Image (cartoon, rainbow, N blue to C red; front, side, top):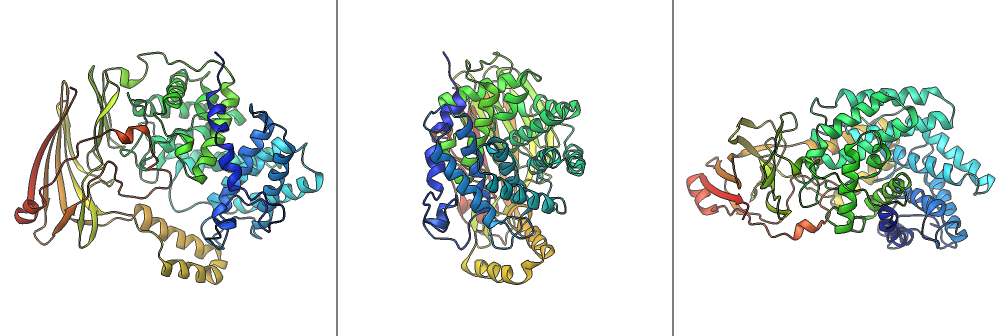
Length: 547
């Protein structure tokens, strides 16, 4: 049976991508992918990162198995309109804006450059010479901008891997070894921060979902350079770390990661599966996940990530080909074996026997997932405790250096409660940013300072409060037993416990997408709030056992 799971899955999303594009040739925003801007007229500027949509549409025009799109003249006309609009919204210094005027985002400029360079390769012989020349000028101007500026607010490995990939492409496009040298420095930075445990740094920890995206960009870098050292780093990241976070129920990643992501980007694994054998097992897992819809699917995503994941699926299809779906070699994934693996730097412990598979993050308040291996279902998941107080919502689900004692029998940890980082823009903040855009943001140094402060407030800044959790996780033959002791300062009052199937301490743009496993009904521990306030401590015990 001939199937192309990636192409067939993405073909269903072309209509969405085209609907975001302003295809009205009489419109002043003809070629804009930001429908909220051009159709709903909600924002006061287009989100430039959405112009990335010209890349998947270029792939569809060139390679699509859906005959309606391949070499279609209307589609080519719309892609050309998207190119013209992209040229039009570029800042004078070559940068692009995503969130606010004069943002001059390094990350967005790199991201859009990757789309422009690849679209150019696909369309160079098909678009008119004048537009191609203008497109080349736009790429050159953006490449000049990124050659002078870096993303400075955090170590985000998947971003830096993208930057290295773009610079390698630019080095060949512009015949300039300076870009290649810059790419090598960026790769060194990623590998310098790669943990001895295999994972790549994402803000302040390990995140399996984003690691798959990082692996894709690194695989592209390997394909361009042929440098075996890059492949060795990828191999280490997969074999020694990533393999442990594919689950028996067909899901992947989640709350135990530093950024809570569950998206899998498959293209990197398809590109190198002939060099790293376990990538074939991962590809088989992904194929099965697509068929059974146990992983995050493109149709669950918003516009930005749908464009990104759809493109990745299309690239994966080019390497996988229209062939039989990859079948996994049974008993090769860690969840199919007996395992007791501790990643002390990441704060993760994976324990598996013939009955269950468990993952605990002891640096993130002891959050966990437990699976029944025989039934292939999730039987336990803890996202931490969330309490409403006069000082805001407090939670123990925050990465910190918890006091931890570990032995063969289990894990004992102590974690503190922090205020959740879930603020959203207010009218006052929006007005203030627009005023800054008209004044101080003319100077890029001021924008960089503002972005650094924004990231600290939204993602990495945290304040400890007078509540702590002492948790003991005990491993047994049929599952785990959790004993919790919550203690608080006598001056602290808890109003109520916030309970739900999923909860997160930090809002991340690429997390909290729906997967089938979200519908599994999991019993959540109930805290006796009255007792906690009266006695300043409360104890609980619960079991997660295979039936």
